[in-house]
Image 1 (cartoon, helix red, strand yellow):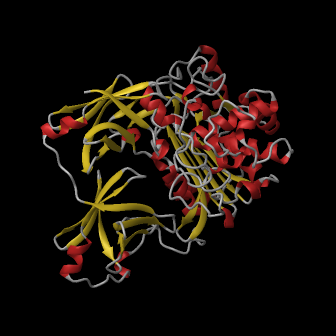
Image 2 (cartoon, helix red, strand yellow):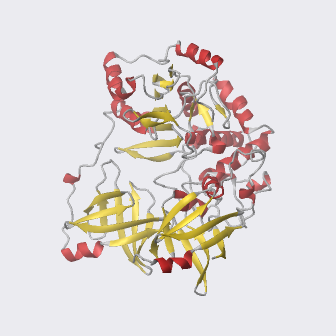
Length: 562
């Protein structure tokens, strides 16, 4: 993305926009304005990257403002019409386009997607449009496949049809409709292609003609990496260390690359909330058997937002990040109140939106901002009971190793990079003392397959961890896991080597990933796209490995040579 260079015409255009009033909404009273100014005081410094924010209450735009610089190098101030990459906020637009076609009778959510896109693989059970919207489709994640292969979704030929890595997938992540993936993203590419087949237009053109232009959203478009005018430059860094232009692909959005301004996003949100599809968009996603999806992350409603609670009241939200861009949409449906935040120099900006929500909805929250653990009575457990709770736990789905251990006779829960004290509610129910209004609960159970730990967050579906005895290998023993492994579907190889007693993966695309043994033939990696490996043996010899990642379950690499 060449967003760091501005032509003279672009600079002139942005300068003209800067002359427009930045507050395009009802004026707040002085007391409210002063309170908002305190929340956003950090961005009064003009030497900060851009941040733009909008607040909508009962269908009215009550606050809209932009801060900082669209370009620090050229000293171009951000305005309410400055464009940002909005990452996952694009998901709602894609879902809306599909539901609009359904409303018009052009598609049915029960339709087999292969009716429109016959190049999709046949897994034995049809993938419906509803499966795609519900993140229950079973297609491998293109972000993970991109990381494994280096194939760029925007390369020549990829936009014209379904990428080869989708068409060649031979085995589903899971049976469509019977499980949920919180990081499924290939579905958005397929949904866009479906819109193109049904309408005869490119997805970009359809959205512009049918969705954006009728609403006057002149600064909103789906685009690739081509330079755009009036675009905030993304930055990494902070006020202390300084800022530099960001070229990173953290959370690369690829086929869902939507650029928009805060003015346009506020217009979109007001339109969506007043539209006849609003009820459908806010409906709960379900598995085929009717079980509601209650993920602690991802999307749980048709509008591709997560539904949960904040300080005791219902909320819907979505966050995203792409390079230096960050985006957040928060809605409190019972109060008919929404906040949208866009920025170009943060990895996460939702805290600013939530602080404004706390300000405007102060009297509506029924719980404190953080749980007061001193008011929760801890169970009195014996030394033997505390010892018995200790253990190591592994989640195959999350590909994460965790540990419960005693420190100074107090239970602690740890995972790579984080550790929290535990408040025992009983010998089988534990609460993590995380400073939040969310309840992080650990339920310990004993079953036929041994002990399990189930982690849930404020009523979410639990993530299951199995108890295990940690493994360790000598340098000589690690040699059995080394070699070159090949996946035919992706036409890519991964080389595993032993380096100073560590099993390491390397190839030209993914760089280096280091693995630590978990138990048996399972290892955990230090990169998200290779966070778990399970080795398969033929006899006693390692013959292949499967990737243990939510978005690429059952993806197997066969050993070629040692």
